[in-house]
Length: 153
Image 1: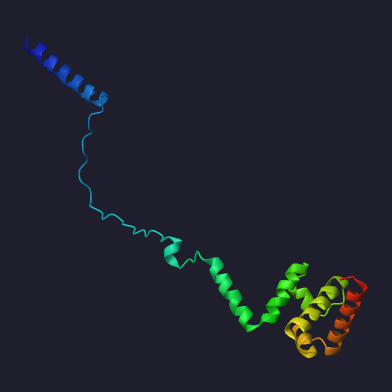
Image 2: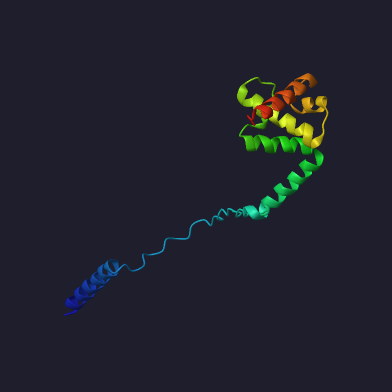
């Protein structure tokens, strides 16, 4: 009978070990290895853009102030730029001494307006338009008067 009991005990311990494997019991812990210090990386979060530099939400106010300063420093140049925008010609094309008709007509008209609105001398008007000679300004003013007399303007 003793043999039978020990065989049952062995069978019982084997079944217990198999059951432990099947039911995912904790595996035996290995012997403790050498302790290694973990590598710690310090990661800094990026600061939001509005904290990095000043953002102005009043851009229209800044542009208005800039325009007021430019008017105070040189009202004639600002007037020429505004008129170029109204006439559909760029300011850079007007101040270059180019003889193309699409640039000459607006230039002559703006020269005439500068003479009568700001009462500028012929040499000063010529300097505003890329150092043109004063006789060129006089000829432009005469041409505008002729076009007004004909009703073309």
